[in-house]
Amino acid sequence: MAALGWLTPRRRSATARSVLAGEAAAEAARRASLAPDDSPLLTEAPEAGAPEAGEPAFPVAGDDRAAAFFDLDNTVMQGAAIFHFGRGLYKRKFFQRRELTRFAWQQAWFRLAGVEDPEHMQDARDSALSIVKGHRVSELMSIGEEIYDEYMADRIWPGTRALAQAHLDAGQKVWLVTAAPVETATIIARRLGLTGALGTVAESVDGVYTGRLVGEPLHGPAKAEAVRALAAAEGLDLARCAAYSDSHNDIPMLSLVGHPYAINPDTKLRKHARALDWRLRDYRTGRKAAKVGIPAAAGVGALAGGTAAAVALHRRRR
Image (cartoon, rainbow, N blue to C red; front, side, top):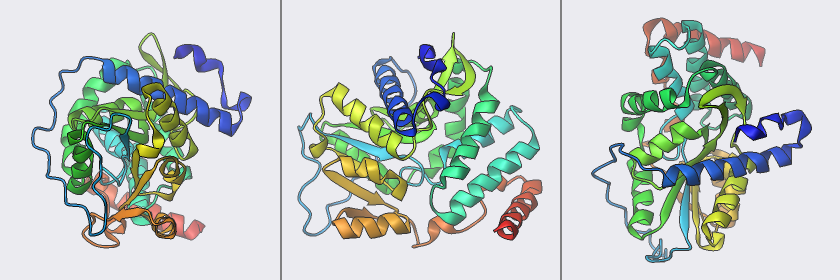
């Protein structure tokens, strides 16, 4: 993987970088899924709900050329994994309070807007890359297990988890597909008992992060390229596969498969899904549930005011 480090964004077009990011994610996902793992898995899976009236039975049991691909942030998990990971790193003194305020503001924006904003998500990933630079991959993997238990385990949507379990029960592989770091995504997938994860691949040399990415963040078209690459490697028929997401940014991925689902959809995805007669599921307690409240990342008392100030500053700039 390190050999690809010379392929800087300036030397590749955006489309080519998406392909590179997707292929790197697929390679990392397959390698991780084949590695032995002793991590504890979720022992009690929620029961899958019955199909809505008029829907054919799905997934189809025994179809080994079908698989399911789940977006992570606000589809499987409430909030963004990268922000929760940042909170855990702050607790372990990887960076200073002013940087945590920045993470809190980014999470506040995600929660209030209810959608992934590429500019804000890119800013968050740039912050994460600078923080992990020089650290060993094995160190971050170990810490990631702890952070999952502290900040992520109780944020999994039971309804989406049940959908994933239905695919597993049918004998199909289930993959997370996310812009979060592939190491973080792999931990979440293993803890949920899923097959593996496609995520953003950070370059490492001799097991140490360099602070650079392979390709670009796994976002938008790059997710579709990752799913396409993995399907080719696994011998899957995308027309028989399913994909699940909350964001219109994932329409390229959803459009690849024969069974697209809009889960907790943002306004643009809801409109698109209805126009194309895609299936919808909303597991939020209210229509605007994902847009309400100050994030838990601002739970440190001094940060609540900082987050509010950031929101006010953003509004003034607009």
